Image (cartoon, rainbow, N blue to C red; front, side, top):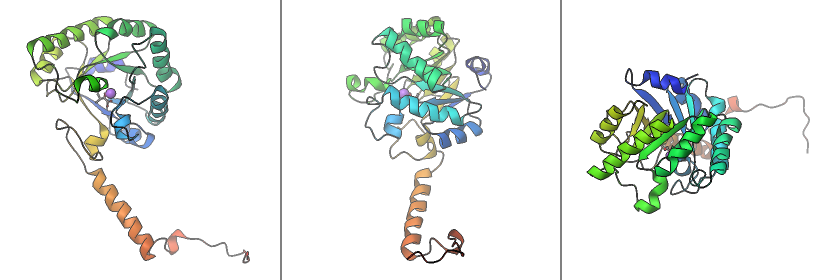
Length: 270
Ligand code: KIV
Ligand code: NA
């Protein structure tokens, strides 16, 4: 099993690989391929649940998907994303919700979209034995504040705020930091400034690791951001398979003799 400590050891030696997964078969494939970290992202909302944003995703949704992924994962570190308003409103609720991801659903760590309001909470969680992955730069739970998904940290002040928050979360005990959609030079500077491994998405090549939404990486998503890369074309594979199935049923080719079996010793039942 990969632990949060293993990531610290690997950082700076070899790139850390992280992908999302939301279900058991995908998690098994991602795990067997040797991915270091599987993130059960609240991106499950867009990727699998048909929502426009991550905002409607609930603790129940996350617990269900984290459970599926944990049951199918042998080696990778499973990190559970904390959904919108499940943390940061009330400390006791935040801890209980994070605890569900670890105790009930089987994750080994949680990820919080971070800001000034998560420094103390991160410290408290770590104190209690819940490893925390921080997340700075573009935090999609702020979509209504941003009015979209714009790149972050693009001026001096904003870049310095990200660096300061990275330092504060490291001091609070976060074991790793996701940097999303920030300039590559900002991500490089943050990576230099902190000890904890940084994992980038749309953050250039100089982070300690990279993460993508698995649906984007395998080519299943209908749409994916310009900073992601499609390494396969699963959507096309599925379209072809489904069309072939329909053709085969409509033409009478399926099911064939080898897909059917009769029980010879039965009499007609009508
Ligand atoms: O929910 C998610 O998939 C994420 C990653 C993109 C970092 O937060
Ligand atoms: Na997320």
